Length: 301
Image (cartoon, rainbow, N blue to C red; front, side):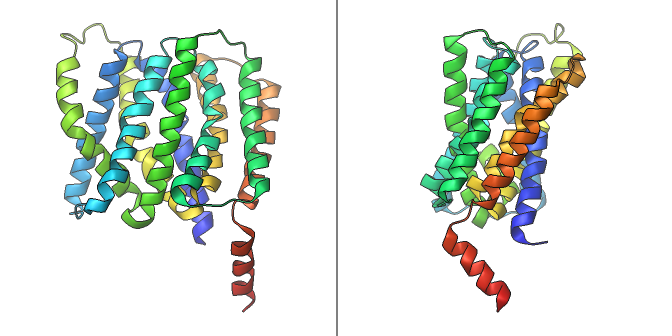
């Protein structure tokens, strides 16, 4: 299996895991305060990451890695979870799909700015078309206006795209699971005291679904998903593999439909097929022409 294919497989597994994040967050904020949920999930994942780093005796990152790791921590450990948890108090999970559809574009743009990638013009055509399809589908589901929720989700997409691109770039030298683990550990000195400070006096009123939601976002959304995701971005390219996020809303809606016993419409299936086409097109045109030519010459020699 070549590096690019491995990157896409890892990226797909990461997206599949992330697809449960918004539904799980939606359930969790019914029992936990959004601020407590944000710091608690980061603390739980951070303690697990610390155990992993100690178990494998990983060497501490170089000083040059600290700023990128800080950006990753602020983007995906603190920023995105907090902003989405706050937003989901004002909007529905279906509403958030509009903004999740913009995440691949944001990741690709930061991949160009921070990762030095240069996809061909056709890549942006497929990426923009895919984002438009996802946002358009979400609009057909019926959305209630909430300026506060919209602003929070837009900010979440920006910081998450930056965190994805920075982490993908850093994973090329530091390793995928090492990047998210060190980012979590870096945030632990702030997250652990805040968790203890914001902890409610009693958990008696918290029902089982909220606990399950907290467990999912702590273990899968904050740690395991990133192990696959950052490895995928590093191997397959930030801009290219990032387009797999276009599938995330449909995986998430399918999970929500399964959990809430809602029907999956023919429109959802049709849009999903169209989005898969856009992802395939984006992958084909993700590399510059000169790189494609170099690979062709290498195979023929």
